[in-house]
View 1 (cartoon, rainbow, N blue to C red):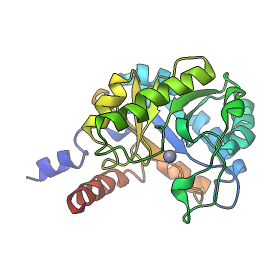
View 2 (spheres, rainbow, N blue to C red):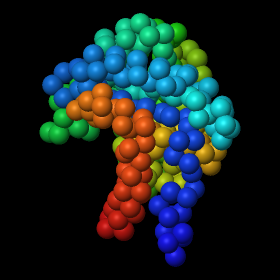
View 3 (cartoon, protein in one colour):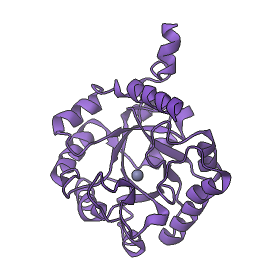
Length: 261
Ligand SMILES: [Zn+2]
């Protein structure tokens, strides 16, 4: 019974430190974003403990022992502050990040956070094209930045196929990576995962907490979310595994929300 519960909570299925470690950021700077100098310090810490590679390279070794040494940096939502603050810091460290962009929201702002978080502008088409490709790969973050659980076929096509096509037309290279908006385990479902795979994406990130993902999680990769208030000590503790308890807690939370909807 206990072993079964343990497995269901995701604890028996995967060694949390199996890698690759995928770190998730949102906005930098402004009144409720992570302070850029803290991102800088976190890049130093991460570089000292991991080989930081583009997410596509980390995905390529998923399930292999070498994945344990690798980390990747991701940013969700495609904010203008990524160009302003993150790119110069990534450049100074010689690092690379993946920027997940809601394809239908270019040139607008984070309407989905209205009333909860500060208004944060999203890159427009021109500024997205101008990003330094040596340090960033563009991934898709849906079309409308909606929860993808329960969407019908037509809606799923828009969030995946259309989003991919639009971004590929804009940046002129293949867009192979996807991140589910909101991204907790109840924010997308099996149909969404299938739609992402059938749209040609090679992997997809969730926001489900974890320091490692197995081959079976290629379309629901776990990430370590960094919150704006996280000190370097908290960041180090997350990387070390002190926050691994968040994995079963989130899993249980998603299960409860699914039952009450
Ligand atoms: Zn988002």
